[in-house]
Amino acid sequence: MQPTREKILDVVFELIYIYGYNGTSMSMILKECGIPKGSLYHYFKSKKEMVLAVIKERLSPRMDLFYDFANDTNKNSIDVLIDAIYKIADKEQLITYGCPLNRLNQEMSPIDKDFEEAITLIYNNIRDKIVLLLKNDVINCDTQAVAEFTIASVWGTLSLSPAQSSKKRYLSTISALITYLQSLKK
Amino acid sequence: MQPTREKILDVVFELIYIYGYNGTSMSMILKECGIPKGSLYHYFKSKKEMVLAVIKERLSPRMDLFYDFANDTNKNSIDVLIDAIYKIADKEQLITYGCPLNRLNQEMSPIDKDFEEAITLIYNNIRDKIVLLLKNDVINCDTQAVAEFTIASVWGTLSLSPAQSSKKRYLSTISALITYLQSLKK
DNA sequence: TATTAAATAGACCAATCAGTCTATTTGAAA
DNA sequence: TTTCAAATAGACTGATTGGTCTATTTAATA
Image (cartoon, rainbow over all chains, first blue to last red; front, top):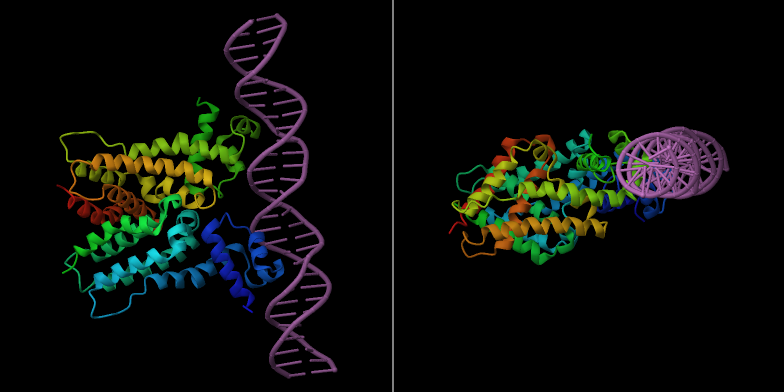
């Protein structure tokens, strides 16, 4: 059986992904975990500390998954980036609910410095990875701005009305980004 | 003095813009308005109905403001669109907190059909305006996808870590979009 | 001036919130 | 087998939640 603390982190990640921080109550978490209150507060001193742990131990690794570029030196790095953007289309949860980091960022960063710091750390990490990836294979341009724009447009696309969201729609919207990125090839 | 109902709509718009739906309590609203509970519930039967009214009567007109393109027939419509994107840079609140429609969308659409509908309506409106604008002056391409991508990348850019957000950063990130849009000119 | 509905006022409600506290159980080390 | 900290268990707390209810005031109309 999964250790209690790990179970809590998994459940909290999923719940705040869908319902947000303020939309997720401790009682929802306890019910979903099937544990008593004493257990939860044995591992985490408060709701905030718990969610900050979720950011570091669940959200951060999951974001790495999407932006951990295979260092295939044979392939043009622009194509590597484009592959990563295409791969997102197959993650149903991302298509339906958007980027979990972006969602939490919009809800919490404007009202809590600790959340902002933790989230910005992950964001900077992703951006720097893209900058590093692009470095060699790109025409002379502001690679940091390009990386930033790439992230912004992917997350922005994922955030558009869930009602109409689908893999097909993601791909057609994001094709403009692909065209743009292709134009940056050396 | 401003009529009570209008005052409530103004206050609620500002509060949920910053704190979100679940982060804004009725008591916060009453305190900020300086009115008793009886007055508020005289005009709105519930929190949800009140915020749906805010979407229709405050959020919707405000979004129109940003995407109401001057129909200057002398100007290339791509340039009209680019002007609108540049104009956003001067709205401090947008730079700091991001797009209010996008924020509310991410918080509420996945968990409430009524919010999703109301928000999607506004979104479709903006998209259609851009499609209509582009129609004539653009090379042969999927204008709906281009419109969608434009909105997604602007809102995505506005949502990036408030800690580092500034007019300068917005402009450097969005410059990639401008380059792309320029390339669509006939 | 009398009537009446709209608007204001705020006490009150049950439910839920995050969090505390004490008691018990578990399991590994001595 | 004894010891003892880690973990589980859940009753309980004060504050706050969204919402109801009755009473009073206001202002327009008859």
